[in-house]
Length: 182
Image 1 (cartoon, rainbow, N blue to C red):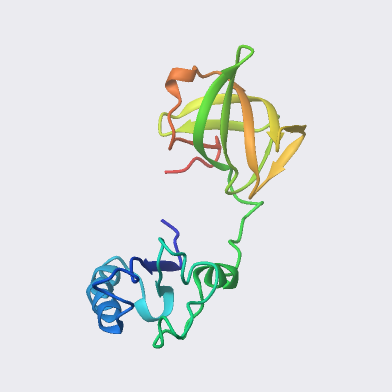
Image 2 (cartoon, one colour):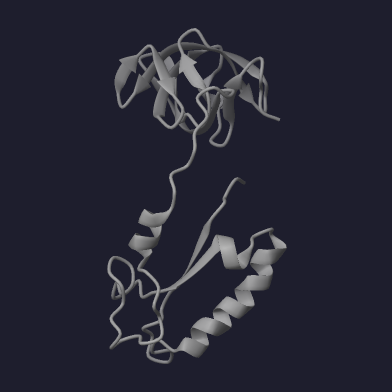
């Protein structure tokens, strides 16, 4: 699915039978690791295990104090997220817009999604996959502002013709007609 890094939050470490026990944490890591390896992750390189408490918020925004958990020396969840490198987006690649939702507005069919790859303009020739339905782009909006083109990484609202609202489903993908997704 293109997921290069995985953060596994080990929640409820504050629970009264666990009390931030290092053995419990290590047991969860030991049990999860073979499962994650089976799915192709290099557990030592690509997976970060982070104990936390969702109830009290410990180790989410700020690192858990050593008085509560003296064995964990790693960063808090927010620090882990801040340290990850940003996702590379290919503006030169084929258009890929996974559809999040659709609606009708003033007679136009509107599709909302994130432009993962490529550059979209009102002149783009696109198809909706997996149905392979040709779709004409009437208008492109980025952050509710009409624009002539949108680049990879932007959230877009695309007004289209050639398809009915009932034929559009979340998870379908808008693609370039010359380079459709498989």
